[in-house]
Amino acid sequence: MSVFESPKARINSSMLSQYISRPVCFVGRVEKVHPTGKLFTLSDGEGKFASVELNEPLDEELSGVLEVVGTVSNKGIIMASAYNILREDKGIPFDLELYNEALKVVHDFPQHYPFEIATSG
Image (tube, helix red, strand yellow):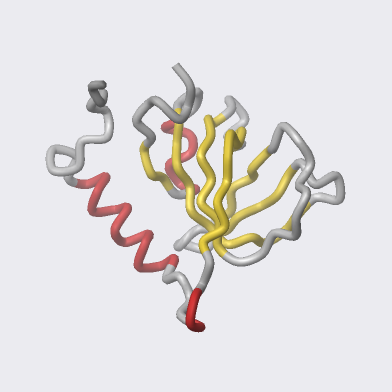
């Protein structure tokens, strides 16, 4: 089953170690891109960092807020299957701190936000 077909937990940097070898969705602001274009660093709503590794070097300039879908390696690096730049339209910045608060609610009340349910069809 591919990372796209399975349910993905939305996580922040402090949750990485709990999701080793599992599919995740991570939203963060681009901080640093490695010269090879295959590795970059994102900061989350708590100001903590996560490293993201790509299979292929980037073919575009990365900045702003990204949503990354991938699997967490045993070193705590997100092995990205895909990423999506979240456009900040009309000058309204994406509020990572607020997003982080929502993440906490989702993780504190899993009975109301079940990620692990397999979708049918």
